Length: 126
Image (tube, rainbow, N blue to C red):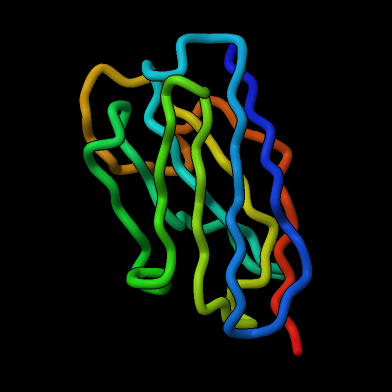
């Protein structure tokens, strides 16, 4: 059973940078497509970014393109989300999630993600 634990959230000012980490355990990590999702107060959860099993393919929501970068280190069972030029509208709880996969696609849909972490809070405020 794959387990995911996010870390790295915090409070920072607009324009700042933060790197979120997602540590995986309990299963063969490179069998899984990994996505970052977020849920802001009063809003539905939305997809932020997705990375394929081998790290060769990535996707981003339009709202974060050019500012966020997803990466993974399969040797360390880790996925990262580097977030630059943060905006107040990026404030949310950020979750990593995994989908068992036999492809190298990088499309992560919330209902298909079988494993979820508990989230880490990112607050962007002046």
